Length: 490
Ligand code: ADP
Image 1 (tube, rainbow, N blue to C red):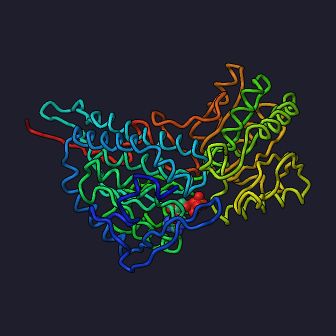
Image 2: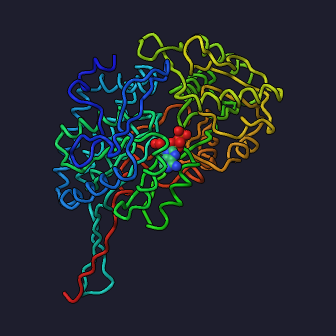
């Protein structure tokens, strides 16, 4: 399946440094596993801080010339890259399913979403303009230049192996930055495939470098990306815990930071909501990518008047719509969890809730007969504060549903968390829609809609969910410095 991808036909799996496909200096490799049965797919270089330094040097050298390219030239490079990724979309989706486990349809959707960032930034390239200011003195002219920050380091996760790279790389490259990408140890093959297409699109050597690493080496590679003074901006998508480590590590060299971290999304169904719409939205918001997304609905709050209807329709829909299995087979809608450590967390959260008296309406169990990492879609109610699952990001196919009685009470509960990434609510009361949209402490809100991410919108969180925005025209700001220029005595 994997080796049948035309995209992978002509090359071994190697890292990309300074336009060369290379092994780790140490010669070490590590296996990439298919989560559907934990079988090895390929081995890739296990690069460390030494390799990372070489990649940073290459990016810094390339930046000297890349920063001077015309916006139109960068736009054309991105456009060529986009066209190649569209041409190879089906191969990219197959590679993605193989290493991540999500169904082919979900992979196709991710590839489309990921590609859209490159198209978007190709279009935005021509609008990275400076400003001319009104000077407070007659003999002066003041203006602001917008210039690329420098080398960008990216540390990306396994849940969206394609889109989390293109969302960062598109913005950085269009601004004139060069980059070093450290993909997740679980999903480096997608990163290598899209880098191969970037090379084919004509990006100069060193503009995009990919350092593949095992989990053990990720710490050293991360340290190098955070502490090397040649890296001027670090962009990370992943857990809040790791984000905090990177934030600290970046302080001594005062890097720009873009952090897209964990969420704990409330999903509120108010009294005036259309229940069927809310159930449909819940299916995609909760179960897309087997619940492993940072914007997944994590805490359902349903008004007491609709509660029984919502719970019963949701359970029925889960039974009829979800088919677990090998994502490479078209008939399967959902795949496994990514790895053993995730399965352990889900198992322990659900077991803890069960022992402390929660009601498990469906699922609640590991399904080893399908594959070692499959977990049944689960609905839990009667969850209390004493249960571990009450407050934490679940990152799996487990829906926790609470009952509420009024708006004030539910807003207080929804905001009672240190993070604030996405939030969703269903309502047909126009005043309530504005009130709640203003008062939910999150960076992104879906109203009567469970899937809201797109390249045109600004993605990002508040509180401990991160710093900065990706996508939209604001995404470029992370990679641009404003330089004030004053011409006097004219
Ligand atoms: P998740 O919990 O979703 O796996 P992580 O935050 O652990 O998310 O991982 C996201 C990315 O961060 C991956 O590329 C991983 O290799 C990397 N990573 C994990 N720990 C560290 C660390 N200490 N320093 C740098 N990168 C890390």
